[in-house]
Length: 411
Image 1 (tube, rainbow, N blue to C red):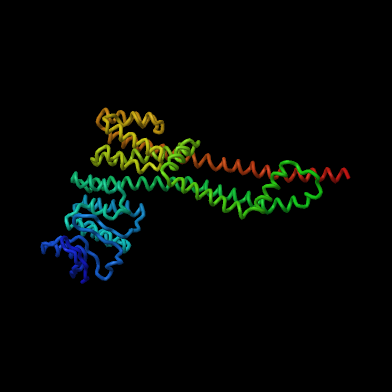
Image 2: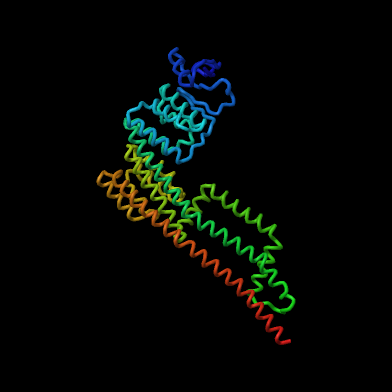
């Protein structure tokens, strides 16, 4: 039996109650005609890991529950399966709470159960925790509660999370190899220029009156790196920091994202990834019965590109004014024509959610093709660049040796 500190509606002082868990404490207080606002373990009061408001007013939660995207997808799927199987919501959540989860996750689930048993909706209870519940999940929970099909909606949500997780892993797999290759290339060139080249050219500098220009370029780069590395490294760090800080501002993020969309291969990849997320998320939200404006505002946050997010803001304004989705998206030039035609057809036929599901499958396949194209084309480009740099360095050394040989033969 644990002791719980309770803040009750209409009372400024904190009272205590003994109960085996938070839910039992809430039920006992409600049975007395009291309205609990906050219930927390007395032993941890003031330094509590988490705090839940159970009735009315602002919800206060001071914790961050560590739950990865894969764990959230699994939690949503398991909850959907339990609900479809006929288990009551609170019983299903209690069952999930004891299945090998961390202490913070169990506490979060216990808080959700307590709030639901106190009369709050699951969507409001989830919103009180913020992370790890995204706005997308909260809106789907709310739609499922309103429609009375929470299990089916959660199953769609888990499918959406699984597909997004699969896409993220594909992007990571596609970009990891080129990034590693680029780091190795840059490191190898710096090592050759700063260590190998000075040792090769140092004996020749006093023997040749005028070095060939490729040799002077390589020698100058070597002298620059070895003599001013203490300026170059902090300078590069400042440049990276400035870019990151700029990207964190709305104007800077918009400027950078707009330019990234224009980069060959990379721009197409970013656009295809954003469109795949857009179509899948909008299809899921529309199928759950969420109004189109609310769906667009939630979907906008999944794009990951400020330029395309601004287009969706404009689309929302146009839809509010009574216009269609397709027209402002087409004028932006950022969305593929096939998507515009599908949206136009869906709006005219009244089957937008069904058409968006079909579009999502098509653009997810297109994204896989773009990822394969990127991983196929980018590494050879890096190798060609490295070959050019290495060839220039080798030419600089050979030309210096040939000139040294000529100067020796003329003596």
